[in-house]
Image (cartoon, rainbow, N blue to C red; front, side):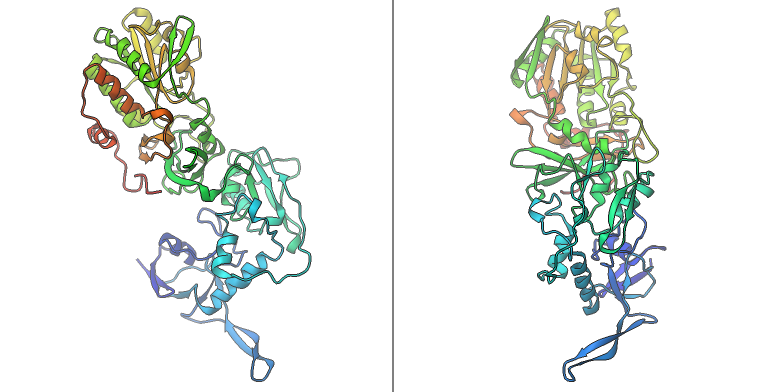
Length: 537
């Protein structure tokens, strides 16, 4: 592979690479604002100017102050070039930390801050703002401007999810290019000139496509803010864990940003993976974090007739074991979940076969939603492929379970997850299985949903944010996610809870750790590649 030198370091590059992209691939950041690896090159912020000393070196005529003569004299300086636009060439010598390049970064940074409001204490971008970062690395000087800064509109509502502060905007045009090139909805543009520039929404329109939150995500400063995250948390209190989006079968890689003080998730951000989601997520996917805390099931529930009572997790496990232990072999139906991890589904399927002699498996999950040709898959479940891979001979549609219940071939059901693609009346046969005695419908879930409402025994389990596991996406790629927060009240992942129930019934599969489960899982299940394994946070 050809290479060039950047500040004396050999950097390999691929044909068509620019200097900044090749450096980025090696984990080296050349200061920049407008460049983004997933967008076209704009080269308008001028922060990535570098000095090239190989080949024909261009020079600019300047007037330089001569201290001895006390006057400006004609001189020259190297003509700097934007690294985001400059094509990499073999044996090229590039300097991003030379005296001239550092001076250019300093002056560019000062220019961008001339009219910028000093409202970092109330800005949601504080703590992850490139203006702050580069002020520390490339400027470290107080503002010299003494005149009144230019004032622009503040708190402009761009649409249902985004608020714009024009005074903070540095006109990098990332948001415009994202809407044009990725979301395919050219709703944003730039108006006016010079220091009166601002971003505007097309007349008669709102920023209301399925990827609006990405405009806030690509903004390098605090100009665009999310209504959902606005003023809710400070990023320096948040920790990030690698996750996988539960919104659909694409399996977008995420960072789960949570506050360990409160064990609460505050947002999801896309985690770069060019093979899956590149650098993006859709709005609905980013908002799935709300499921980690809303409609949470944190206690067991027992239904006897029309009466539902809350019990402790331990009592719910005892009730589940008592109900399932009295069912004749082969009469337990098992509902695996396209919403739960492969580990959870594997332990459920294995316990059902070995302990209950189960032969009937059914698949539950969310009904289809609106897909697109960008990221959104029509399958609204993250792990349909993984759930099917761990069930012997696959699984039937959940609609077939009602017929099996009517025939009397099934007298008890154990289900995983809250969601089903059936309505309440279609799930009525499950709800009619009886009370907390033999012949019950036992549901293990972290949140409320249709299957939870149709259960006679509900056992709480950890959510995706509270456990580690694996999802297999629509392309057959297995991807791992890691536990971000701790489940309340000693609640355990579904696989561990199933092992507890099994122990009460004399089933000892030797699965004490997550690693034990992964080692025992069938070889037919796709194994995570090195890239798909959850990285360290």
